[in-house]
Image: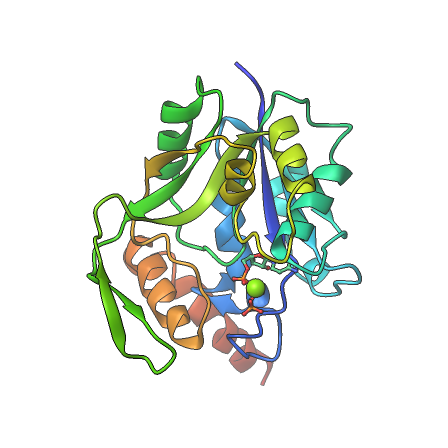
Length: 251
Ligand code: CTP
Ligand code: MG
């Protein structure tokens, strides 16, 4: 069995969310978004290490306490201008610790609701695969093609259409060579780069709750999903009560 590693591109600026800071550092359900995105990967028994690709000069990462993960997470300050460039730079930076045939699971920092079962499914379905693949969900809504005036010009058949998610799981050498060959400005996921090599990544059933936080309204939805998984009250009350209590004691 080949080793597996995770790589989290977290060097974006969050322009569409417009929060004034990169969205990976927004607090949601008591933690930075990035913490939620990497936690499940860092705790997965098949994953050796989680490499987090940060913008060069990122000052925020080290303000948070990541000690619970020990050496299982490693920040790399080598983000690029695009997501694909950040992933490529991260892969280059890890070339001495990841073997050619090792698996790399690339997961967006902006997807905080990934669960253990989805990672298990990726390994279950791809471990023996030559190409690799990605989590995705079948398109559920009716799909309309629009013209420039936002008028419908066609209804697209939805059969066989899937919405790509992350993690996307490919072997190190294949992935880095595929990304080297593409224009990083047009490639928005790893699978697209692999397709460019003439290969057919396998679609693995994802979960619609593995949403990507893109716009401000996505934050509330992601928070609701995360809170619905927290054990009732017990894990929340201490955090809430402790701060005011300390304040009062000082008087
Ligand atoms: N990302 C990255 N390097 C970039 C751009 C994006 O590592 N140059 C990362 C983001 O941090 C995020 C993931 O790629 O975890 C998905 O990108 P997206 O949702 O587009 O995030 P942003 O680029 O930060 O947001 P926006 O496009 O709204 O600016
Ligand atoms: Mg972006």
